[in-house]
Image (cartoon, rainbow, N blue to C red; front, side, top):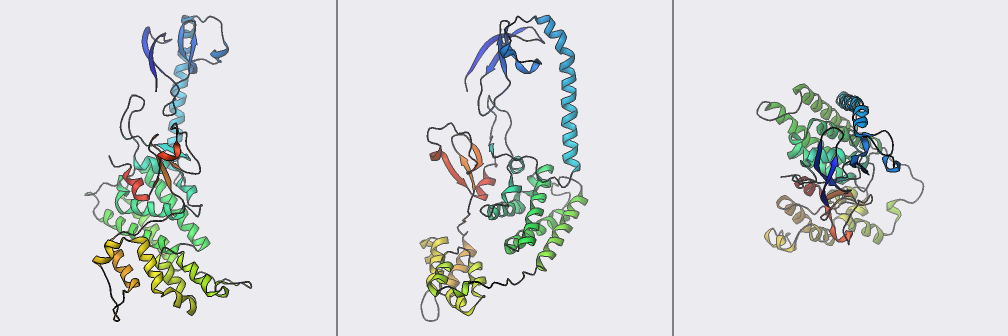
Length: 373
């Protein structure tokens, strides 16, 4: 960002040297207008100085704008207070911002001061709408799961409120469309365990807000768990073709597309044919090769009574020792050139010559690591 020192006359003080900050995507700054008396901030005047070529009297400007500036400052402070009170009092506010991208600030520079925290990023990126996208649903749920395990107390009060609002929308969505109840149950189980620990050790751990708020949140989570446990998925009546009507090789190909072992087992319980296909050794071998490296196979080799490798049992043994490969339909992306975090389909104002070469997908764990300073 270019910077040059220009002598200008300020309406509120004497002549002094001030830096002129040009337009920049990282910090656009104020709007300045060049007049015969020097550079002047555009927002100080009630009309467009860019089209005004008349001479301006400095003393007249000071007298006219002193009172207006004071009134404007008071109005701005009052408006900010009203917005803050509204957000604090409105417990059902779903989000604070709906931004398509954010700048990840890790240290102070001449252009920017301060840094971006995990809570700020969680508030500003629109996760509330992201859960409505089937490609991003599991990504957001995984992120919430990781925050529940280790980062919940590091969030600000506003971010915690937004966290539970997003979580409520997720639970309501699952109860309505009957999809993905298993992952939400796991999330709520870990979150309730964490809240129990935090509430018991109040005083030893830092909790933002009154203890009664956390007790109320825990009761709400227990209520959600009860609703999910009582969830009855109605049997769909279909007069057309079903999965069982497909040829055997097509049913087998569908199973090979799954990357979650629990999904394979659950589908195998639907019909005897699918159960037979779900027990295929080659299917579980492919699943092991997808999630784990060959070096890991040798360390935890599991043989059957006949001396063959039991790939199904081996998979569940390996997942106890190593993390599984994560796969999401859509993720956040990070631009190394601009230090911007964004959803890929929304894009961002990149200044690189080859923007695609600067992009890296951000896993949920990587998202949290970006804000560890």
